[in-house]
Amino acid sequence: MECECDIHRRQMKRPHKVINSGFYLVVLVLLLCALQNISAAEHPDTMRVTLLGTGTPFPVAERFGSAILVEAAGKKLLFDGGRGAVIRLAQAGVSPKEIDGLFLTHLHSDHVVGIPDLWLSGWFLGRDKPLRMWAPPGGRSMAKHLVQAFAFDIRIREAAPDHLPAKGVQIDAKEVAQGKIYDDGLARVSAFLVDHGTVKPAFGYRVDSAGHSVVISGDTKFCPNLIDFARDTDCLVHVAWSAGWKNPTPPSQRLLASAEDAGRVFATVRPKLGVIYHYKDEEGLSSAVRKEYSGPFVIAKDLMLINIGATVTWRGGFSASSATDKDKSGR
Ligand SMILES: [Zn+2]
Image (tube, rainbow, N blue to C red; front, side, top):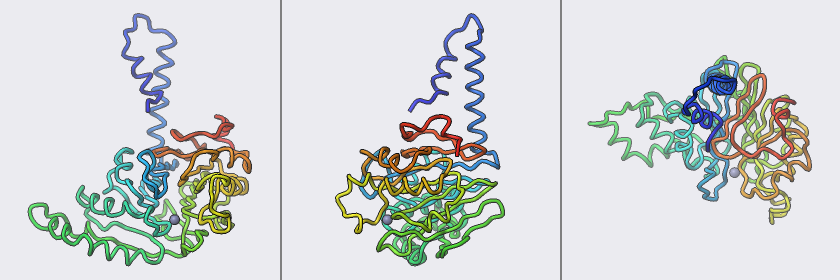
């Protein structure tokens, strides 16, 4: 999609005989674009969230499986590794070898099928240390069996002529319980239990850094424990399968929140920005959230980018109809 910067760059190429105020306006806009990118990528007080995959198990070209990149304090933390995560990382300009930690919300296949690609392509592309992974119980077994499943490729690539380093193909898998699970002194990750019906345990995650935070629900129904862990967060990324009326499964048998449920969570937490992801059906989604919540939210699309600093801004995705520019930064 063309951004304002592209439009202005094209305009810059036109011949100018007179340098007028329009020229200075263009320069100013370009400067602001550049500053925004710099602040997002390098400013230590800014957290950046990229919604790599916002889809479900259903194969849809525009929306890949669950995967969210959080960049905080110089670290690249990936939450879930669903279908196509490595492709979306490449589109976001990130190599799989750069991922400092992989955090799994649960072991449903649509959240993990991209892991072999992330792990092995990261190794192929130069990672020389183990892939660090935090996962619910079962994660260590999965890591061990992935190594077995890809034993042929590992053996071949460790030998001549590739000579890839043995350490780089290891998976350092830790199984998580509720509480703080990662702290490098600048960024902190906490896991918390969510309610994904029969899928137990399932976790959501909260990342805190430089006084800012983002919360990722993972797959869950309406969950009071999530609300407790999400208090005062800047950005709450919450699953919603569909508007309630679009889901033929009776509410008591559902494994995932409806858009109305997500709206109720937003209304209680009051984040600076609510984000809906992992939705199957977009019809009625926005109005269903709006029924319960009057604050700012956005329906995510793949590669939507959120900058969390003194204000929360985003690019890409669909803004809710009544979310205005003012909403972007107001709690
Ligand atoms: Zn699930």
